[in-house]
Image (cartoon, rainbow, N blue to C red; front, side, top):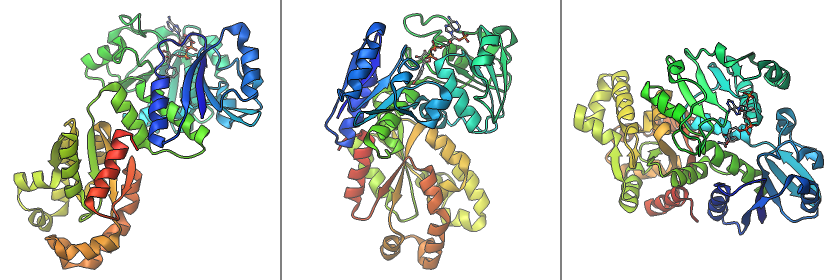
Length: 435
Ligand code: NAP
């Protein structure tokens, strides 16, 4: 499969590295080239593209709009956003998509910043802001303030894009970030001009979180200013990887686990993440978790073992009051999430509280170890799990209650239908993004 990135100047692009990692993880033979094309040569390039030079391409500055007249069809999203960053060639038909929209959503998810119900302020009314505003409006943002150096022009450009959300357009003198999530879509602070920020640091007082689409440097001045005031801040690298994986999904016509995005992001950013295992009691989390910690030379943390060490037997705690046990478990989940480079094994009920999963997902990739309930049932006599031995039908009830929660919180679902070694290998493959 021949893929590439179309732009004018591309020397520092990370895209070839990301796509090569994705292709190799997916076991697809292919190449991803940088395609530098001067403006006057764009028509000719688009003509050759139709003729079959590439199977698919990404498009970047300054051609995200300029390629549109050459396309045979546009996805609904690309039409609405008015820009294309991914082209699929089907025979001689070219179809345009916008995966920045999905990439931005994935960036919010990875940082556990919900769009729904939040108030957002977006700096800059350029190309990237279109995808950002469309995503926020589609996903229930309570209000959006768009900040532009030319508010009147921006108001016209963004007309109708945020139909579901109240949007206000202001100049920089109208900035008020109290209780709002700030998204920077301007290039201010980008390498090599990294010592500037689009706004003064004191404007960040009271801000809830900062999301900067810039990924070079990995901490922009805006992010550093935010963190010095205790405001959490994230850069745009995860978005870059997620939009690339979404493009691969379009080109390969298949869906791809979130854990590949996380794996590539972890390897490129060099960030030390945790490997979190969730699943039913008796599904093999401890055995598989220990194997993985040893092979990956990571720390190992077993939430239930920690709780027993600090608070006594779980059966006793449970018998006194489940609510009390769940409180202890939540505190332990917070503690676990503060670790890094650690394999974390969770108790079966950790998914019962959304906040537990929020904390764990922020610093870790979550694997659901899915052992068929009949196998857990047949294994159970060999284990010393008093709760399960007492009432085996309770196991089936528990499985029915929790299965959808495990699936919903997992970045990756791993079948544990053979032995622990096989399950550990399956997780390892996903974690390392290798086949
Ligand atoms: P763009 O179309 O050039 O728009 C950026 C907007 O920022 C401009 O329209 C302008 O809005 C504002 N701006 C530009 N220069 C400014 C300055 N000196 N001071 C204040 N505001 C300024 O660029 P883009 O394609 O939207 O990209 C913007 C940034 O997002 C870049 O840093 C890009 O690398 C990043 N990005 C990242 C990803 C990712 O995957 N992480 C994806 C797309 C873009 P006003 O005129 O309205 O003020």
